[in-house]
Image (cartoon, rainbow, N blue to C red; front, top):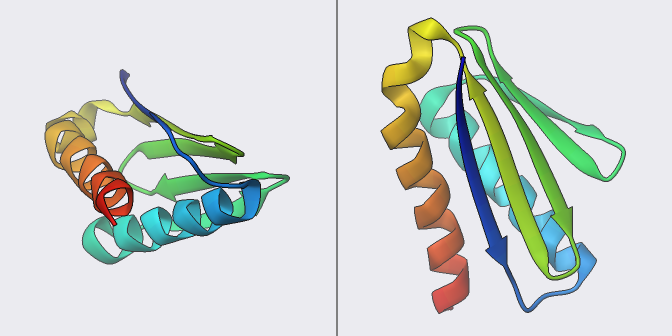
Length: 93
């Protein structure tokens, strides 16, 4: 398995960070497929091709930990680029 981690410090409260996490997850689902569900205060994203992610929003920080299977390692650069783009767009607004 390959691992990918994106973590950002944000100047937002917990609810705004939750909203950003959902926005990020919806964009990942739209672009790559898969689905997500809430797990307590975190979210889990899963794609049947072997992508599993934990999105952990909290006041002031959003972290995304992704595990990629053998068949999806080639997606790592695209996933990282999309996650960074969504977070950078939020930070610049």
